Length: 90
Length: 454
Image 1 (cartoon, each protein chain N blue to C red):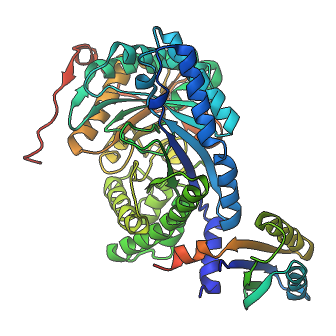
Image 2 (image 1 turned 90 degrees about the vertical axis):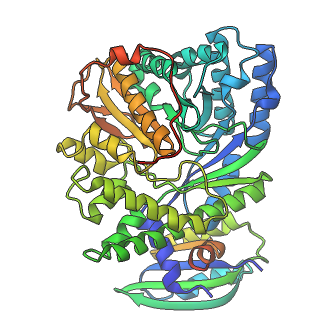
């Protein structure tokens, strides 16, 4: 199963996780893992999700997530897990 | 499983350090297009390029979106036209018509450059190849995206000095004929020694005759990533320095490997090679010169520059080789002047000269690159510069190249703007003592001895 990594970076505010998760649920994307930390007042979250059952294409999900990020005032990126595996695992 | 720290590191490289994949270049063989009728030849070339590359740009964009790493250029290289057109072309204008076909095909599929308006004359020229070389100025003047290269020597064959002399004249003529286009003609013309068959980088890319019908080659980049990694080990010894470069090069190259594999799978085209070059751009922080400064030089060109560049180049290869299943192309640090802000600054303050650049090319790819010189430089002087650079390649069994741009009406120290990725450059002084008698001898320099290395 191909997994997808979602990263959310930005100023911490109320409801970031709620809004992101709501969008994912509406689009049939299953969350497998969440980790989160605050670095220098900045909210850093990483989610590993399974987007294989989503009806929308990767490009569309990615654009809509980015737009959602703009609304909340954070940066949301959606990337294939492959890029991180190939770069950080021999 | 991947952790937050690793994800952040990768994304920081993209957002703050200009990590990108510089190019996906599709190599297309045109050998099966050869025809004795020039119209048929043009038609076959156009159709083959369109059929092979129609999805190249879309696929590149799709991969870029999915992995979140910019893929800056999508390009095409083709079999050297000096070979492909030999049977059909009866005049230089026939060759120019092929250049126009390449340009049209490049625009149709949406690639920003197409390389392969080239010929390989390291030992001798056929009449067709000589005709093709003479057509280069006109071909570059009437096309936008065609890149040209000529291989004038190799370690195995020696240097074809007739071709070296001719190329000096061709560069001057190209410069003259394209002067209204800010000398862009010469920015798309490279003279090689030991040209590789699988180079994905422009302007010197062509699809060699040893290659398969169609392949995908990828050029990675990331001077900014290396520079940033080195800024964290300031003052540490060479062991730490070299380890840091190697590890960083490994990570950068892995991105290229993934992109190449994905592009190959999605396009149904075999994966050729990854080119492990550090390719700078004029963007701040995307500079090879800044890496050398981070290693410990006040400015590029200072004593120690050649040694610093040698170690950088070697460590990049050592890190990169393990990261990719096939490595090829030029694979070395590029030191173009106009495309690297640190190099431009070094020239402006008088730290970097043409002679020091020449010394630097002994230890890295690829040669005297994107260097503006006064417009009144003689053709024979340019031939002399080409011969010097080619001799370095021939003797040291490496690729060297010259992409030099005489700027009409400009004097030493004036600035010339090339635009976009090609950047801008100060006009550099050239040693003006004559080499006419040397260049005008004609014939070729024999191949060097392959033993007694000193």
